[in-house]
Image (tube, rainbow, N blue to C red):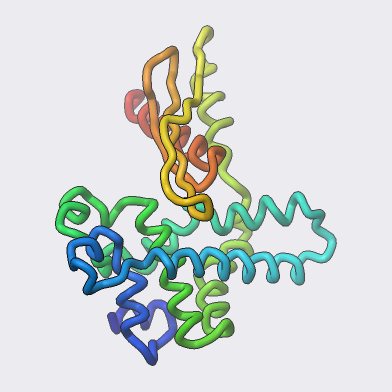
Length: 226
């Protein structure tokens, strides 16, 4: 945990908050009530992250219209962005997972990693206040905006351009499932090429899930070209 704290640039007064932030529901369920999952912290962290990013963009870009502010915020707080943060922190190594989830590759699962990032931010906030949380967000998330890395990747357009190299290709996105409470919905989408499944993805909105499915499909197509 010390290494993780060093990466975060924050030392917890109450280490149990960080432990809670890294505890997935699968581990909590196995503990039979002895451990709490990070779901409540993830809920709080989502709001803290959105508020800090919105405040930064509002103050830093007085000339940007609402639409551009919204798109930039979405790019910074989307699952794909949070997974990149998790990988920088090597967060998967510290996750406390149930045996089944761990054996099934849960440490590398994007949704688990993204949720853990939000939970860790909430833990920092509860332990050290909004200033400490803001520093972590500045270091790992807002720095992407400063570096000009916030332009959303349009995987759907890239996929469309890729398949249109041949005539008669038909892409279709299908919502195949959703789970979670209203405040924390996760959508699952598959993209079909000429009626056959090509890629699948999940996200916190249907649009994000479609983008993730398109990204997976591009990887498949480019792999087949190699």
